[in-house]
Amino acid sequence: MSIKFIHIGIIIIGVLSMFLFAGCSNSATSPTETARSFLESFLNGNENQTRAYSSISLISAAEELCFDGQITNCIDHLGRDEWGQLETLVFDYGRPRTHVYGFTVSLVNARGLFVVIRISQGGDNWVVDGWRGFTTETDGLIDGDNQVNAFPPLD
Image (tube, rainbow, N blue to C red; front, side, top):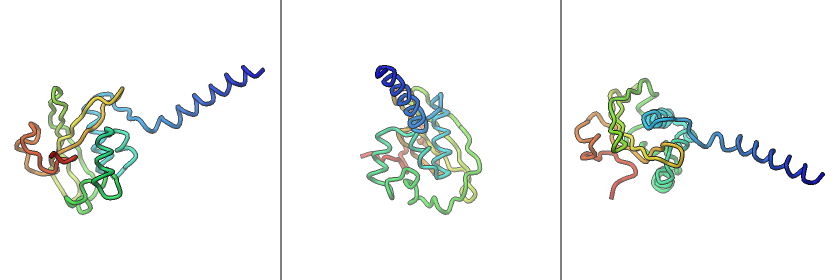
């Protein structure tokens, strides 16, 4: 009888674990999809979803360098509060070999901002390591020659 209860207990723990950890991982299947989903949740201020698409190193950097340790606060100094809500997010191009993906973002009060998202493999998922851009200047951003507004900051 006690072995039966142990098996039931193990099953219950397994089921509970699935529910508890289901919200902690991302469902993106490609680097481009991960970058897009990260950027969308990031610009919409959804911290929990943004963290689900973030690497451990990005989360650590945000906790150390951004207001309240929130990733979604890491671009406040660029005037994020004045930009308004996200209107469009367009994938421009990417470099799969170097895992960088460029997007043009338009918000209510900020049109045509270019941002590059850096991606890496994090276990079974693609995760975001950082970004650069949030500017209308595109020269050198995708190649990394231009590190304007890079986060985490490069030394």
